[in-house]
Amino acid sequence: MRFSSAQLTPLRLPGFRSLFFATLASSAGTLLAAVALAVAGTAPRTATARKRAITRTVSEVAHHLGNTPAVCRASYVDPRVIDRYQSGATIADTLASLPAGDPDLSDAGVRRRVEAAVLELLGDGD
Image (cartoon, rainbow, N blue to C red; front, side):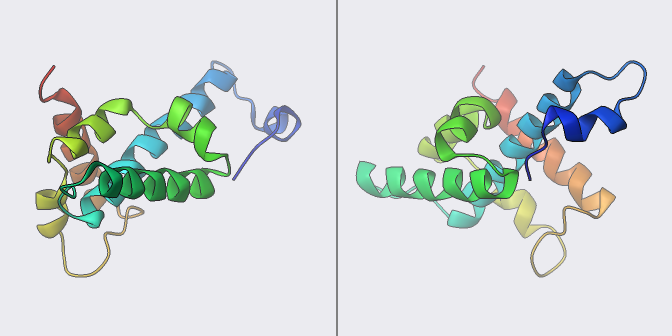
């Protein structure tokens, strides 16, 4: 979902700037990409298959955020998520440990566990 400056103007609160909303979108993009790549499974052996999985993931995240894939990848998905996926690291173990079914990121407990897993994923190898 995209928001223009005019739409956000009534939502302005003291101390919050548009950068706050951009940071939220960036965090959401990184989180969604990490989940999508984990659900995609182990990184395929061929470079072409890996590229296809990454392209599909970025397109899904872009659609969810209401942006183009190019802008999404450049601005809203931390490149380390993609680098880790290509190296075979994902948050799949965390997702597997969640209650059966699709992870419900609107559940605060689930979201905290997934966010912690993404932070750990981003911290590895730095």
